[in-house]
Amino acid sequence: MEKIQRSTIWLSPNIMNSLDDMKSKANCKSRSEFIEQAIKFYSEYNDSMNKGQYLPLSISSAMNGMIKVSEDRISKRLFKNTVELSMIMNVLSATVDIDNDTLKKLRVKCIREINGINGKLDFEEINRYQKSWC
View 1: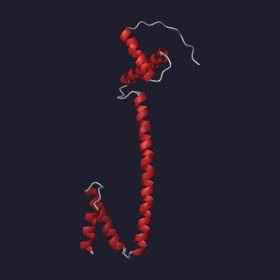
View 2: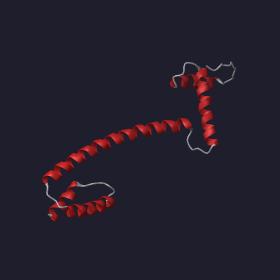
View 3: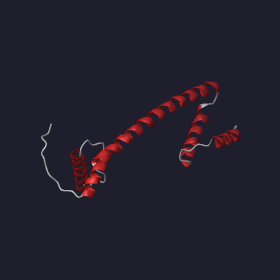
View 4: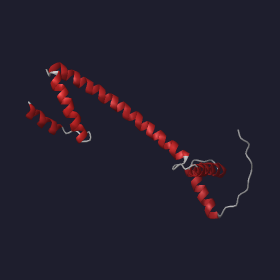
């Protein structure tokens, strides 16, 4: 543990009241603990500004953590969707007789369509196309 040094600081009554309010909001046990955390935060902020970084390290670290959690959720959902899609494809393939040339043409059509609509599918539109195609 690092040796702690005693120091005297002079603050106006308004700042002292503000310090007490902020200390409890930050879950600090003492004014000294809050002041030390505030100095560390401000020091990181200044260092990041001097290095040309836009965000202080503490904020950047928190954002990275939130992004990682979101990334994990999205990955799990994509995995589940892919499993379901695989099941649908297998059931469909077992029940429908479509030749490979027709599948290739359909793939090209679908790629063009998805690119044109930015991935937003409309079941009614697909159903109309299939009814007119068959």
